[in-house]
Image (cartoon, rainbow, N blue to C red):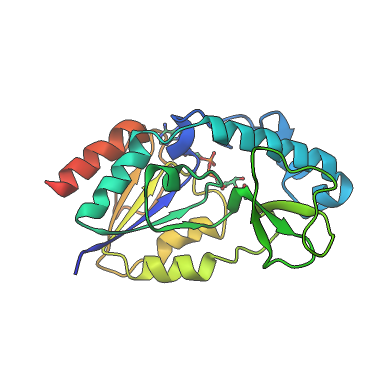
Length: 226
Ligand code: OAD
């Protein structure tokens, strides 16, 4: 059986694809405060603003391409059972070719019914607008986990991490819970590696590689495949 590598990724892995990270920009996100656009209260207050904010983010994602870090993780599948658990809402892991990707915080290229959470639709193009409705006639919302909302994929992610032979953490500040807590769900013998040029503090059993993902991930993957 192939060894199991769980890869926990954050915004940093997509930075070199041109998608800005969240906390490298002074508490704002593309000039919005997170509470203005990424909370249930924001949605209640101004749906048009929230939809337009995510339209702009979606446009950016569609213009971006996977970088060498995303591509190297696909290569890793030749010798390992690789489970990607990502906090990112972009689809760059899938477009690179990774076969097992779990999105903790939703997927920007999908919309969800506001009355039936199991009705999830692909968005064609970059826009989701006021008046776009589900099969029951209710406004569609971005398929994103907002602050203050539950993380439905958390249990599945924790189960994956609990069977990891290696945990590889890439490009995340580990500032947002419950996702950040996943690093504590590893079995005792699991090897842990973190790749981030500005690595957050973690327990001493982590090997820290202070490099950008586009360089550090292909180097590590080459080592692991040697
Ligand atoms: P953050 O913006 O908090 O952290 C990004 C991390 O990426 C930082 O630790 C940077 O040092 C690192 N970084 C920057 N450039 C990098 C590069 N080229 N290579 C590798 N690492 C690099 O992003 P997340 O930790 O992903 O949630 O944020 C977690 C969640 O907070 C997001 O999923 C999002 C956000 O609010 C929702 O939208 C629900």
